[in-house]
Image (cartoon, rainbow, N blue to C red):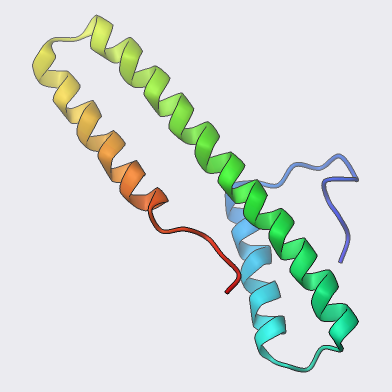
Amino acid sequence: MPNTESEGVELSFEAAIEKLEKIVEQMESAKLPLEDLIVQYEEGIRLVAVCNDRLTAAENRIEMLNREATQKTAPAESVKAKDAMKAIKNHEDHEISLF
């Protein structure tokens, strides 16, 4: 499997998840030789890191937007922004792992 990072192509969160799902399917099929399983596992670990990086970047951006919105809006509107942030944090609680 090509290493897209070394080719200078950045994966989106969705593309990384899709590739990760395919790797997990292949690994679960038990049809791969051990060496191929190790290569797939390494790629999976890299994809998990990509997903975590994208989620962290999204969280940071949302926090920044919330700070800006809080400075510009009335206190009642900032409650909605906090609710949106809680929803994203709840999504992050679902840790991505290969096993």
